[in-house]
Image (spheres, rainbow, N blue to C red):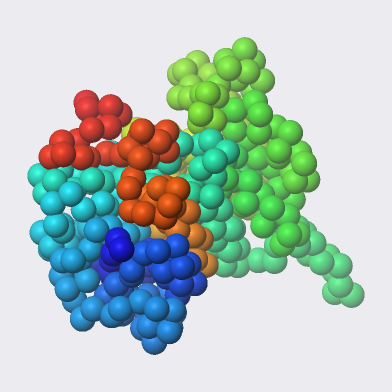
Length: 377
């Protein structure tokens, strides 16, 4: 019986956890044994007693949890002490952030671990239930609107009262992936007037279906601005200039702007210039969801709320899913539970098929080497 270890998160102020009592019970039902480090779920409001009731074995330390484990589940990359406790050949599945956490990746390879980056799960139908990026981006988009509304300090919906009318807030979403679509839906639920933009032509219909207005320069480059995997391509300087001109007049009229644009393995593209920020009204708010990859907004600062000379707040809060730790953990834990099914054969025995297209895509280290071609540079 393969043993899965789940430990506390030790990077930054991470509040999520890689398994919940619900998924522990399902993993045990699938034929795994699960060991959970004491306190692993506390920051997400999951108690040790609930893990024990679900069938998990509690370990007092990370080392004790990991030493006998065949598999380690994490939210973020394991730290040195966790990697040191791994047995050679153990499987690690986590949000490894492999383009950035290169030292952790090398340490995993040197240890002989077989590591899977959950961010590399391919966007195919069979893998949707395992897609960490989508499950966490969904909550990030929701939370971005909540953070923006709180910082804005005025009402979101239009209100008609005997004392007069309160105008609806104007919200502009830049980047319409999973996070952007959820941000649109959330802002609409709160009663805002919502507009959105994206370089991928397929998003126009999605934006309009949610009741928002789509804004973009719709030229030939725009029509071919999406990869086969559904990601945005980096646009030319010429297109970026035309798009900037289009939105410059628009952005100055907005109350809340939410930016979500990311390019895998690259710094986040700059979408909002200092001049555009300066055109916004005092009290306006920008929420930069890409702040951990350099940010989409000039003047944004990781971990801070920057206030410009004209009174615009730029929120650089990292890890928005971690601000909804219980739900974010529940969704991510279900991603991992679905992924765990790929580690079993048809008879339910622990026998990963490394030729499976999902495992091949997500594999980053094996046999002492970094194996993923995307990380070879």
